[in-house]
Image (cartoon, rainbow, N blue to C red; front, top):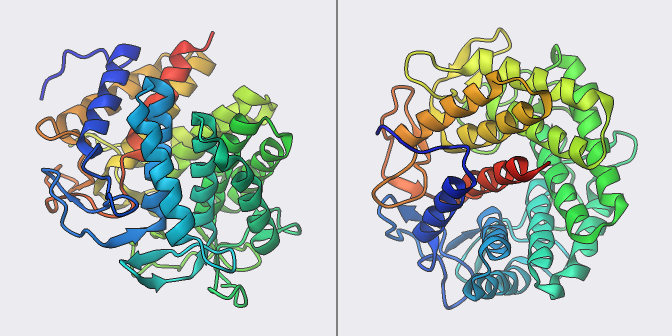
Length: 395
C-alpha cells in the first residue's frame, strides 16, 4: 500500500496510536476481570480464559500511556481494571506472580525476572497516569527483584526461579535484564527516585559493554550462571518465543533505544557511540534488500538464520533510528526510519482491522490469522510511536 503519510509527523503518530488502540479497546476488556489476550486478525477472541502475565501487564501499560496522551476516562478505568486482576489473580501469597493461568487454574507458577520487569513497568506507568494506589507496589516489586533475582557480584538479574523461590535456574539471559532496564527508566520517570536510574545504568553498562565484549561488541542472548556465553542454547529451536537462538537485531536496536533514553536523562560519553554501533551492525546484518524489513535473527558469522519478519523488530528499530537521527544529526538514520515505516505500512499494519500483524514470512506472507496471541498487545508499536513523539518534541 503506497502511503502519502508523513511518518515523522506527530499528528500521524498520534492517529496511528489511536487507530491501534481501537483494535483492542474495548473488546479486550473482560468484565469478569483482566483482559482477553487472544485475537484473530479481525479482532475475534479465540481463547477467552488463558492469561499470560506479560499480556496482563502490557495492557495496563498501553492504557496508562493512552490515558496520559488522550485523557479519556475509560482508559484510566481500564488501568485500574487491569491492576485489580494483576493483584487478585496473578499475585501469589509468597509474593510471586503467576506466569500463565486459565480461569481459576494456575498453569505455570515459575517466577520469571522478565515477568517482574513488566510488573514494575505496569505499576510505574499506572502511577504516572494517575492510579496513585500503584505507588507502593513500585518499590515492593523492585525489592522483590532485589531479594530474589539481583546478583550484586554480577551486576545483573538472574532469570528464572521456582514457584517456592528455592530453585534458581542456571540460565542467564540478556532479555530479562533489557526489560528490567526499560522498567527502571519508567519507574524513575514516575517517581523521580534516583535508585531506579542508577540501576538502569548499571544494567545497560554490564550488558552493552561487559557482556557485549564477549561477542565482538554485540549482544548475545544466552549465558550460563557465570555469565559466560552459551553459543548452543536453543540452537535447535531458533524460533523460541522468549529465548530464540542467534543475534536478535530487534534486541540490538531496542538496547540502542534504551541507551539513547538513558543518555537523555543522564548523559554518559560511551552511550551514543555504543547505541550507534548496535544499530548499525543489526541493520547491516538483517535488512532484507529484496523484500524489505529487518529479519528476525542472524548467526555469529552475520548470516540471516531466521528470515521471518516480526512486528516488534520493525517498531523498536524505527524508535531507535529516530533517536539516533536526533542525537547525531546524521540524516541517514531518518532514511532508515522512513524505510522501516514504508515497509511496515505496506506489509505489517492491518489497514482493514487495525493493529499490526505479528509475524510474516521473509517474503512478507502471513503465517496464520492470529494477530495477537498472548504476549502481543502492540505495546511495542504504540510504545515506539510515543517514543518518537518525545524525540520530535525534544528541543
